[in-house]
Amino acid sequence: MRVGGWLHVIADDSLALASFPLQGEEPGALVRLLPGELPLEHRERKARKPDFEALCLLGALTGAPWGALLAVPSGSTPGRVRGALVPLGANGSPEGPVREVDFQPLYAQLERELGPLNLEGAAVTGARLRLLNRGNGDAGTDAVVDLDLDRVLRALEAGRPALPDVVRAVRRWELGRAGPVRLSFTDASPLPDGRVVFTAAAEDTRDAYADGAVTGSAVGVLAPDGTPVFLDGVDAKVKLEGVDARVESGRIHLLLVSDADDPTRAAPLFEAVLEGVAG
Image (tube, rainbow, N blue to C red; front, side, top):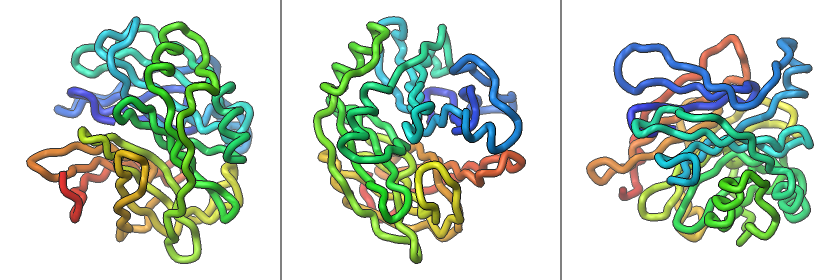
C-alpha cells in the first residue's frame, strides 16, 4: 500500500509491517504489530502465524490525526483473528503506538453466514469498509462484505472489537477459473469514485489453510455497489496477493505484489497499467 512517500506491505507469516521509502535507496524498516515470536520451522510457524492478509488505509481518527493502517487477519483459524492499527505521520510513515484489534466477534458472525473464512482484501469505499473473502477450493465462497465504516471507526477509537451489527451486506460471487481451478479474491485497493480494484488467484488447494499449485492470477474491478464489472488474467503464472491502485492522467496505475509461499525468495513488486478501464 502506497501512502505519501512510503510503501507498506505485510506478510502472512510475520508479526511485523514492512515500510519502505518510495524514493532513494534507503532500506525499509519493520514495525512490530503483535508481541511474541514465531517458530522458524515451517509447519509450526504456519500453525501459529497471525495470517495478516490485508492492509486498509483509514482516515483521521482519535490517536491518529493523519490516518492509520488497519492490518486485517484472515480469520481462517481461531488463532487468526488478531489485527493491528498503525497510526501514520503526515508523510505516510508509521508513527505512534500500534494497537491490537480483536476481529473475533465480527468474524464469528461472518463465519455463520459464509462458512469457512479467508478474508484477504479490505478497502474503504464511501461509507463502507469493504472486505473480500477468498473462497479457496470448489467448496469455498468468494464474497464481498460491506461494513458500516462509522461504526467500525468508533469501535477502533474506543479500543473495543467491532460487533456483528457493523455488517451491512454480504454478497457471493463467482470469478471464473484459470484452467481447472477457481479464481478467488486476494486483495483490494479503492479508487476515488467508489470502485475497488481487486486481485484474484487460482490456487489448487482444498481449503484456506493448505497451500497449493497456482494456475493463474487476474486483476479486476468492483463497481461501487460491489458488483464485479471487469476481470483480466495476467500472462505470468504468479500468485498475486497485493495491489495498490492510483489514477494518474485518466489511467489506473497499479503496484502488484506476488507471493511464492517460499521464505527464501523475495516477493517481487510489479508495475502495470489497467488497460480497458477508464480512470
